[in-house]
Length: 120
Image 1 (cartoon, helix red, strand yellow):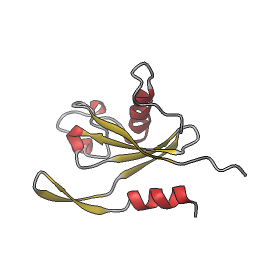
Image 2 (image 1 turned 30 degrees about the horizontal axis):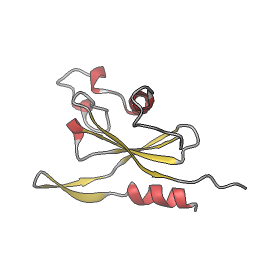
Image 3 (image 1 turned 30 degrees about the vertical axis):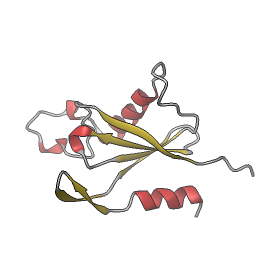
Image 4 (image 1 turned 90 degrees about the vertical axis):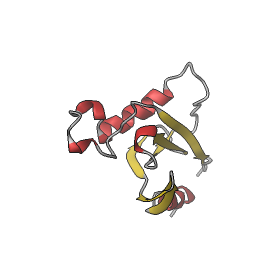
């Protein structure tokens, strides 16, 4: 198993976290789509569904600091395509729970690791 796959497996395991004084059991949601070369590991934390997170493999050329690019929007669209968005449901609908994307209050999108390309 490659280092990248081992890393993904380790960060997507079920874990117990403390959030606002309460204990939660969470399992980060691994998005199945791989964007570009998939060597950048992105963690997405929507404020409305904390402490739940998404993990996405994205292109290693990612630059989330550049406000002129639309990579954050691409990332959110990839999640919406796989998981849906709360905007697709009525407010009373119970299917609005995580992993359905709820980005109404924003959140954070962070590169947590970039793997190097291995020439073969």
